[in-house]
Length: 324
Image 1 (cartoon, rainbow, N blue to C red):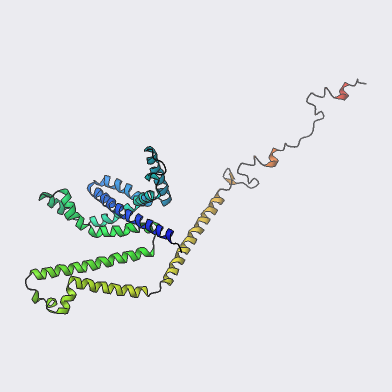
Image 2: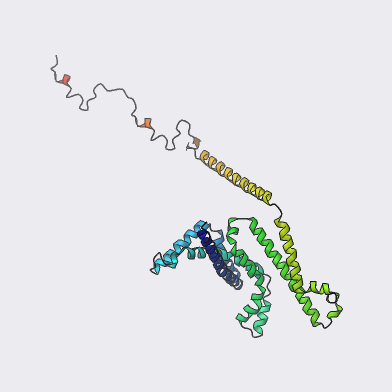
């Protein structure tokens, strides 16, 4: 069985995913930093511009991307074989356009908890803006960078609506964050205990088993093992009933929306009935007042004149006979 097309599609998806993450995350971070430095009015205007791609339908966004880059390519005199008309390039640009907005929202939520006094103090002590960004702001944003990378990788699912895979992704991110936080806390306390020169006074350090379990590596291994057990038992659960229930709910919502649409159309047709002076037309259902009714073009019946000639009967044969 030839799977070359399947593998080629998989490779293209991987390239697009990596490219989108590599471009959307820095763009989202730059958008967040720009918003944080602007006054309130300009911030609101720029936020509206940056968040708009999320609200635009995907079809309109795709068509506008093709049209825009086609115009750019023609302005440079490029033909259809150039990069401006390449499907991979256009797909990357279209995805980055709205996915970077999701990354911006993640960074904005994280940056709201940042204390700007830290960078101000560093600048007063002689640090450059680049050093403040690399040594203060960037380490603070590391959790948000990881979350934004995961989200931008699957942001197309977010655009299409709620999906169970997004809930699973959220659980994975929360689990990894908790494991990292616990291991970091264990490492911090162990270093603090070793610097105190009295590690033998701690019961966790004296007991060999507790010493292994409280070690950062041992704790990380224990948490990973517990996570593996939870994943194993979770994989044994039959989720078919949940999937069927979710599909039924979606189908019910779609049927309700279709029924509401039919009802609106029916009311529009009823309200569009022709009226004359505010009263419904009874004998004349035509919206044009019966002007083009077939019978309206037939002349009314009149009594035929005694002399149908247009010359008053002057050339009537009987009029040429001599009178008696």
